[in-house]
Length: 350
Picture 1: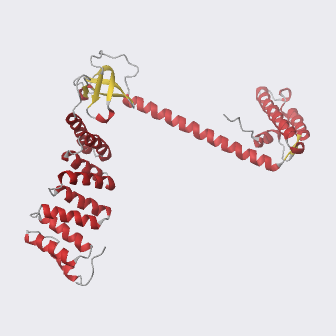
Picture 2: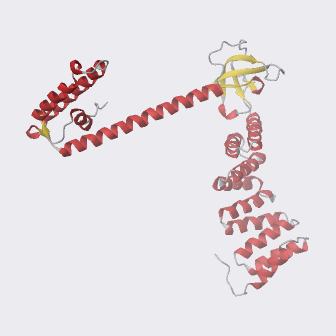
Picture 3: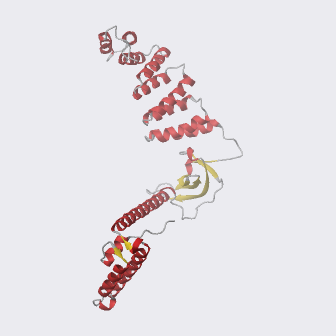
């Protein structure tokens, strides 16, 4: 640990002394200030104030005398005072920053305890029969140790609420006892059960608009069953709604590898690639979706629009006319007109 930084500037202010100075200058300033701040000359009722101020003056003078003795030529330059003052300011700023961060951490910890561990100082109302459990609402917390069961009355005079205080690896949480599922370690934990837990929790998170949390839960479900189409589809939706387009693209590619014979994965891939600005990849995915769902007018319209943005005149006309035959209306006539306006000799943009 570094020692305290000497703040020469403050000491000079106490002694009403200017730099440069030597030991003799400090002694003269000490005597001058001692005559002014001695308790014997203090007004009535201010003796204690003078005593404290004189003590600070003597401490400052002692420090400055030692500094002058150790300085070259026995004299402290004005530049040395500036350097010391700057170092002292930095030290005060750092100390203030650390104190502020410590205070913020303490407040956050207190808020976290109040939110997640309100029964921390209370004796459990019921003994624990099953020691280990999972929270079905947050399965990513893993298995926790149940510390106690508590009961509270509903605010509106309804049924009594039951709570479980559980210690997980990341901290203590108090959750409704009904959301806990006790664990029997004598039985294996099938992958199907893990997928079910994380899928249910992800659906709840998506209903609350927490798409990133839902995607994280679905990653755990995918790890349990990497080829589960429902998991990969929901993960694609979660990442897409969360604005994580690169992650959504990886998820939809995994989905297409498993369920590539049907058009759904390719339709989603086309939309995601288009949002990313990768129009060429979007066109390829849209073409696969249209091939696997030849009766879908919307798929052919999307393919024609993407080819039109790539200046592929013949390809766009082919797809748009196919969409028109299948009954698509809306923007299709206008898109066909735009495709016809492209000169046949213009090469398709790369």
